[in-house]
Image 1 (cartoon, rainbow, N blue to C red):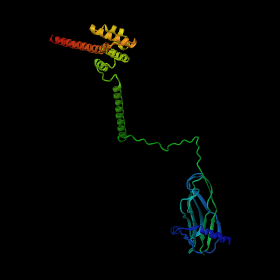
Image 2 (tube, rainbow, N blue to C red):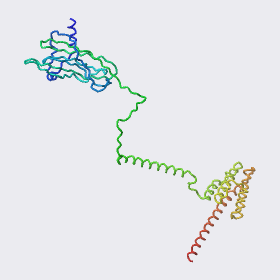
Image 3 (cartoon, rainbow, N blue to C red):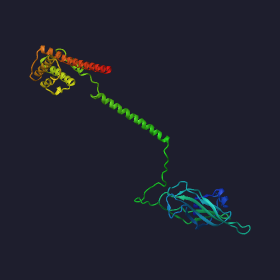
Length: 357
């Protein structure tokens, strides 16, 4: 009873060879759907585990042949091979179907079946380190009298190891040095174009910055002549709205400061940092009409009284202040123009005399 149960369980776990493989091996396939007579449960030696890579131990992802060998099988014997699992496990994976090979054929006497040495194998692999008990190989063998024997091969163990790596001394390196090809013009051209574009943008930005600085820098700004600047400022003080006692200080300060700036530009005298006495002491060396000199000095003296002595000037003095300042500017500028014209006339006369000679 026990043997019958084991026999039925083995039948459920077996799958037949294909017809093409059976013909090649001269081994016929058994029909597992038939009701077969009881056979024997036969322990057999001959299971093998063969490593396909030449190394001392089995490493992760190595491929191995796992199978069995049967010697002296009568020609015409039918075999039922184990069915491979449908769902694979990365710890033990089947990479090929069963393969049957004929190792040796031995002829017997006349009208006697030949004896065959057979080898069945599958390719297996493992992707995890460990020690595994491989599934026991169970093969059904139908004899000539129609009895199905169950051949149970010795179980096998598979030990999978990982390659040890010494992280302290291991230095990864290229298997082969990099190949360096010469740079072509087509490869350099885009970079040259980008370089020139960036250069033009930098030049444009720098030019704009320089132009903006020059525009805002007084040293590069267009300057009107000193007499134009002075007359424009003096014109802003016209009218009697600045003659009120509380506004006279601002009025006289504005008029005299305008004349100080004009004198500094016209004669190169540091009038802005000088007192009235110092200014007109320096002006003595300038060829000015005496009346113009005296009127200007009187204007500066009156302005000092208003600014520092709280003096309140009369309306007549206030009305005369601005015309005196304007006349000082126009007279000195006219003198400058006349001097320049005289110099040009002398230069032209000298040139003509030299040409006549």
